[in-house]
Image: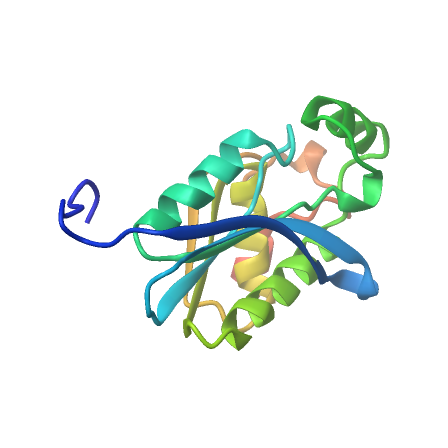
Length: 178
């Protein structure tokens, strides 16, 4: 429960940047947080929004961990190079965005990584909003093994007929086909 921290309880978290092998064996840098208590803990894949992998997502990861979750926030724009979130977002937009298969593959690899950790209880969810919410739905529809999905305010989840293309795919169509 939120804001129910006890004043006499131990609290400690580990928060660090790390890399893992993602889609097509690419190295994906990520932000990883976990409680330092005994566990086991559930896991969360935290998907960032279009402006990119920024401080907001590191803070959100730490807050989830403060409340007992292991969190990995993969930098879905790793393949576009590095720089400030604004600089990388320009590169991503210029190249038409990150491909759905990359997002799905990176999140699948992140889920498998979390489930392999000895302090994970085997339950993993995927969450976010805006374009990350769209990606959360897409990932949960295409990857078996997620226990929960949360789309806080998914941008582009529903599109007009004129906006539909082969990329990005409309998650709602995937849900209806399942």
